Image 1 (cartoon, rainbow, N blue to C red):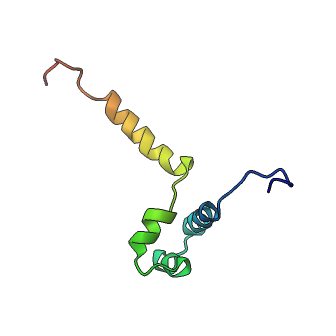
Image 2 (image 1 turned 60 degrees about the vertical axis):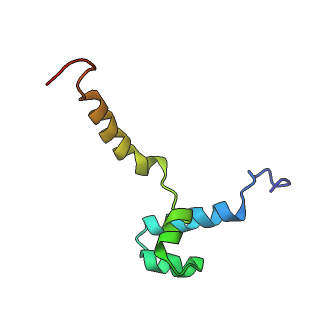
Length: 77
């Protein structure tokens, strides 16, 4: 990577990126767990499924709407 001028990527991070990519393309959770060598789907989701910015944006927008709609401190309903 150094000789090619590429950013250093740990194998673990590449694995997580790959699993996240194929999950976003619709591969079923139990297949992802099997491919990654896990016996429990929750393990795969916990350690290898990394949401991206585009995945998090709708949640952030919802949160922003909730925060803006709150009652100011000291004001009662």
